[in-house]
Amino acid sequence: MDSKEQKEYFKDGTLSGTYHVDHEGKKHGACEFFYKNGTLKAKGQFKSDEFAGEWYWNRENGQPLQQGVFVEGKQHGPWRRYHDNGQLMDEGEWNMGKRTGEWKFYNKDGLLRKLQVFK
Image (cartoon, rainbow, N blue to C red):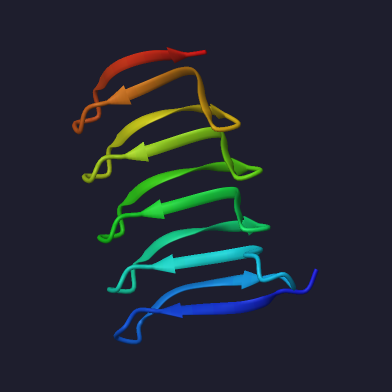
């Protein structure tokens, strides 16, 4: 499938993102989005305008925000989110857009705060 790289810019001219579009104009393939300061905000893949595969998001200071996998545009598989100090906030599994199984939730100091089971 042929794709064309697209770039988006903030009003001041700094790069806000790059992605590819297919012949129908849908986002398809690798993409990256940035904060105004140039820090990577998000990196992943699109498939027919939907999130696909592994995605990573960062905070403006470069610390991780969250990471996980998408299948058919829905969260699926392992997922992790992080507090603003870089400590793990929560982790668990998604099944086609719904939380499933045991999820662990942590305090900002990294201590386990809660376990919750989703069905």
